[in-house]
Amino acid sequence: MADAPQNQSPHHVVIVGGGFGGLYAAQALGRASVKVTLVDKRNFHLFQPLLYQVATGSLSPADISSPLRAVLSKDRNTKVLLGEVKDIDPQQQKIFLPNEELTYDTLIVATGVSHHYFGNEQWATVAPGLKTIENALEIRRRIFWAFEAAEKEKDAEKRRAWLTFAIVGGGPTGVELAGAIAELAFSTLKKDFRDIDTTETKILLLEGADRILPPYSPELSAKALSALEKLGVTVQTKTIVTDIGNNIITTKQGDRIEEIHARTILWAAGVKASKMGKVLAERTGAELDRVGRVVVQPDLSIPNYPNIFVIGDLASFSHQDNKPLPGIAPVAMQEGEYVAKLIKKRLAGQTAPTFRYVETGSLAVIGRNAAVVDYCHFFIPKVLHEIPNFNHKFNLFFCLG
Image (cartoon, rainbow, N blue to C red; front, side):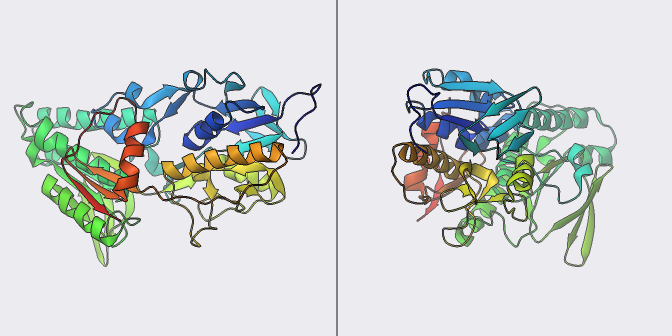
């Protein structure tokens, strides 16, 4: 890549996706001598780590979303375009939206992931996941309606079903949802109802692995388990969900099969790559991993296409410690900043070292007063700086590292 002559248009960087990776790339290119177009099917950036608080009524959607145009308004070289990319032509260097096409010099794809029901897509309507504002509002509606319905229900068995919440998946999202629902049932709503005792609520957290929070250390997983149990959450590990339907969730734990009557079932068990992963594979020959993420080069580009980069949750980067980087916000942020820096260096005729992720830690919140944190001395200040309107205070942190 070389600087365009003065009589030609500036180098055009098209970024698909306004999540952490795409937004950080756009911001890092804000003062560069390039033209930037950020395309997203939503016109706002969403702080996904706090979606669970919207889902449980602690925050409003406005608290965790910021208009992309407002965030990038000071970058005069940057344009935000509302739309969904349907296809690309890497030879012609074009992307296609429903009613228009864009030509790029460099393409950055950061479209993330969605829920993964492992071939059981019919479960999506009865066990919603938590990836969007709409998901969060629907989950919030279901949670609070469950208490209202229980208040009116005269049949004891049906009332127990309304007061049973099953969360599938013991990763950070599942742990945070379980803790927040427990706070609602055993504290916040305790005095608000007359015909039910909300402390009789049963909250089940179901995890297929042998412990919750598998990406964390065993010590932190154990402390998270203890904190959840103190809140009143029942945790079942080594438990596989085999069916969901008719307000019944069927599980298998070893040879034991159990049917659980629950009117509120929430999904936090897995993710799959966005459709853009498949599009890139078909158009460029890029390799995909088992969940559809694009296997990238050490500089986050696609093999044979040095001007196409994939970052964030859509990228499968295994060039560090021989295992894919986790799908967390700090990874996407650093990848976005790296690609922006690489583009600027290339335009200046320079080279840059390959991407290397600097560990900033991980955090999972458990109710109002506890969290498990890894590498807390790096991670907490950075996260708090990124969260809009965040004034939550924790009385207890469990930290390693």
